[in-house]
Length: 385
Image 1: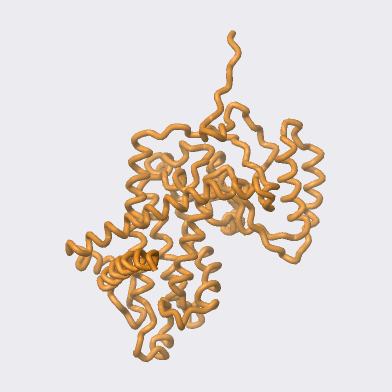
Image 2: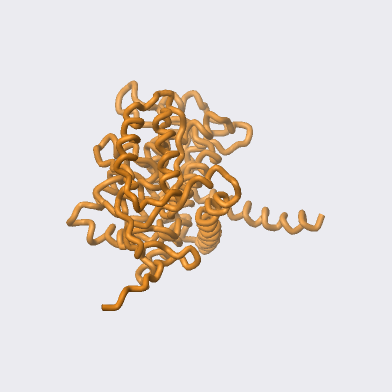
C-alpha cells in the first residue's frame, strides 16, 4: 500500500506534464500536418511560462534517461561476458587509433548543449506522431484514400503490424539520409568546421558520451533526421499513383525506434565487439575461402581470444548469416573516415560503395590500449636513451 501511494503522485505528475505538452501540438485529420506546421506551433503555444517549464522538465527527464542508457550500454555487455553468456566469446575491440583520454572545455560544452537539445527533439518527435494520430470520430476511410498512415496511441489499436513492422523501414529510411549527411560532412571544405571535432576521438569508448560529443549543428541534424524518417514512413512518399502510401506507427514502435537506435549508437562508441546477425539461408563459399586465406596470413601478434572471436564471426558468415549490425564497422570509420558512413547499419554504404570491412590483421599499437580500471590509455614505460 505504501509503495503504491508513493508511485501515484509520480504517475499523476508525468501524466499532467504529457497532457499539457500534447495540448500545444496541432492535430490534423489529413495529410497537411508537416514538420513546418509543428515548428510554427512551437513558436506560439510554447512561449507560455507553463509550457517552457514543462519543456524544461521533459528535458531533465530525458537527460536522466540518457545517463541510465549510457551506463547500461557501457557496463551490461561486460557483465554478461563474465557470466557464461554467449557474449563471453566476444572480447574488446583492440584499440588501433589514439584514444581521447581527456575532454576539453569545448568537449564538455558540446556534450551539455546536445543533451539539453534532446528535450526539444523528444517533444517534436512524439509531437509529430501525435499531430497525425488517428481521428477519433472522423471518416478514416476518406483520410486513408488521400494516402498516409497515422500515429497510434490507443491501447486497443496496438498491434505487431504498427509496432514492429515499421521498425526496419524506419531504420533504413533514417540511415539513407544519415549516410548522405555523414558523407557531406566529410567534404574537406566543410569537415573542418563541423565534423572534425567528433574525429578527435580515434578510438571511442565511452558509449553515448562519445556519441554525442559532436558539433551541436551535427547533433541537431542527426537527431531531427529521426523525425524526417518517421514522417516519410507514416505519411508516405506518393511520388506516383503507385508510390509508397505510408503506414500506421504506434507510440510503442516510435519508442523502440529511438530506444534501440540509442543503444546501437552507444555500442558504436564502445570497445564492445557486438554483432547482430540473422540466418540468410544462403551459404557463403566466398566467406569460407576468404577464411582459409586470412588464416594463412594471420598476424602472429594477434591474441588467441581475439582470434576466437574472428573465427566465430567467420563461421557465421560461412553458414550464411546476414550481418545486421556490427560495432566494429563504426570503429573502422573513426580510424578510416572515408568509409562506413551509416549510423545503425552499413546497408547503404554497401550500395554506395563506401563500405570497408573490419580487418583483424590491422596493426595494434600496444601504447594505445586502454586501462580497464581508468578507461584511459595505458601508461607505457619508454626506454631511456
